[in-house]
Image 1: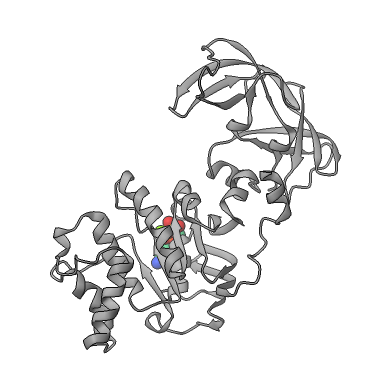
Image 2 (image 1 turned 60 degrees about the horizontal axis):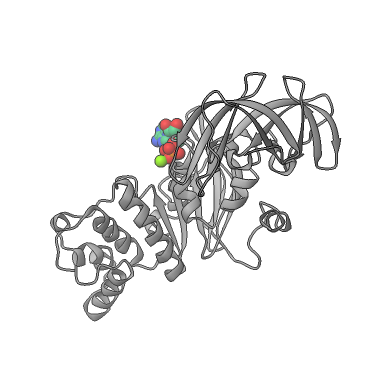
Length: 374
Ligand SMILES: Nc1ncnc2c1ncn2[C@@H]1O[C@H](COP(=O)(O)OP(=O)(O)O)[C@@H](O)[C@H]1O
Ligand SMILES: [Mg+2]
């Protein structure tokens, strides 16, 4: 089922019939000789929860700052709601930003914090009251309007920052690691809250994070970046099930990566020879063009490998390490040629146990064994 759904929709296919909220075309940004963002092309759709995901320093914040207008690209064009924004100052763009270090004013209460921008824009009286009340309600802070920030938890303070960014009804909300300062439990709660909020208000969210789990939890689509270059743009399931290259396969979730030499290619089916001489059946990922004789990289997820000989690829291995993870147990096994192969076993009742040192048979299907592109 899963696979069919993925195959019906090419990984980079845009959502059907949706308007582009933010278009980035050919965006390059240099700081001196250093290329922070390299030929970025992205269409982000209205109402989408879109994430920029990648390791620290890969250019996520720089990209967001260019959309916001705090930085101008050296090359390329940015449009918001169909209008080119080159030269338009930040405060005149229909976007708003929530930063990790959300600067809420400690001496102002919640109401006045949220009202701050509106007041500066000349909104007052009943309209001001209504708009601030509505924004507070959106983020579930009704009843807290009179409180000072120090009387709020970290999560509530973050909601003040959100309300302040939502109050002037931006078309696009830019969020730069907004949950980074919160502890894990609160961060998880806020992830779901933010996702629900985005769904309710229908505003396009562009969310920056280095946390792959956070991006998978919240996003409709994700652009995975590395060293200023977008590696893959897709929905979470496609990124996980069909990573295009080694970087994405490694960055999203856990994976077994190995190399092999292509023996034969038949459509998307590829037969490889691995270092110990064994044959491995795999499928070519989009963008991979394996040629007989060439060396390729292959990825197989640990939960797609199982104990027993019930797959296209079967081999014996030795259990070297066992890590109990609650829901599942991770087994690190060694193949005869010294390669490591990790597998997960769900801890369902009476799941067979293995011990370190056991010789086991492991197997996995060709369709879960991906020949990656560059
Ligand atoms: N104003 C600047 N001057 C020089 N280098 C910068 C500047 N802003 C960002 N960079 C560099 O550009 C790269 C990307 O930065 P950034 O977009 O902040 O990354 P991320 O948000 O993904 O961690 C980093 O190597 C950073 O040091
Ligand atoms: Mg950053």
